Image (cartoon, rainbow, N blue to C red; front, top):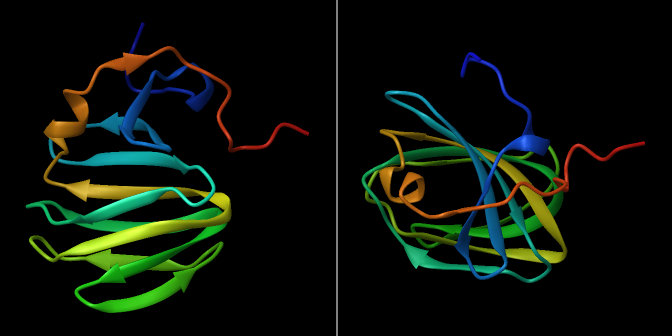
Length: 125
């Protein structure tokens, strides 16, 4: 079976931080992640060599990037250059976000897999 196509519902889950889980699609040069943050989940201040782009799919979060603080909701984006400090806190309903990193997030890829579970998005109707 090819590894070209996949489905979120069958992907293993990576526990990134407390209350923060991700499903990762990784190529040779890029990592894409669909990240689920529980209500009020905090991603503490950090920085990394990876450039980071993202947008909110559902819910909300407050992002602080290099001292600039903004609330982000569905359809709103962020761009974080390499080595720039940033942090985020999910809103009261939590959040689902899509993020892309370059170069790849080898640190995330090395985390143990948890079994696949129903993703928070897309919502089954």
